[in-house]
Image (cartoon, rainbow, N blue to C red; front, side, top):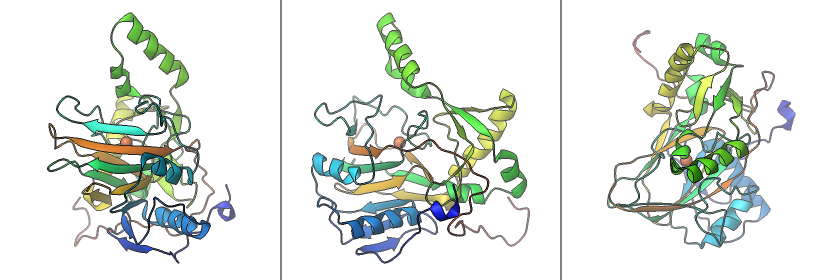
Length: 312
Ligand SMILES: [Fe+2]
């Protein structure tokens, strides 16, 4: 991909944007997502998402169908392979966790469905029932996560490929013959893909650290020991507070994020209280790495300035 193919970022938005972090997260207000978006508003919203990576909106009262319609503006919606929750609206994933339904593995850092050849691009999550306390979601800016690695480590990992797998979702299948047959079918439908360890962002051309502890198995071309050591080093990046944004949900808060530039983690601190969220997701293309792509902007990253070198 050439630099001129990459969409420019625009800033004259017909709504209010309030950044909440240095490189990630913005509140968007004075907009009603239940109504159809005109092209100018859509373009501005898309540019805002590219700029801040995670954007959220308070007080968005809408039906499930309206949430689906909003999602479809951004591309084809995904039917999640492991979660056909609402038969009438197959695109809607319901995350309803409570006393009798603890979370499966939303509390591990990940970008959505990297076990697919074309992983989820955008996720659009709305809070329906908020727990008494807790249940925040955290996101990590994986552009900063890459930019803040030292040059020698950047050079070592750039151009490498890693194997991904749906790992924990296999626990959804019983250990009996019927369960294992179903699991085998899913394994055939979703063979383990490889993705670049550092991907090129399809809109901004920025370099993005693209391995996650939820779905990445190992880096190709290395021993297990080497791969584990390097992956663990890279996983530490998403845990760095300076690269993160944390959202406290309220009912009717809607949040949208770009899985091509962030990872997320749902804080599992509210059980046995109930937390119900509804999500639609936009399908994405196969991640790629192009060493010649120049970013459309200087990749923004957090300068963790210290008084002396070598402190961390
Ligand atoms: Fe997720």
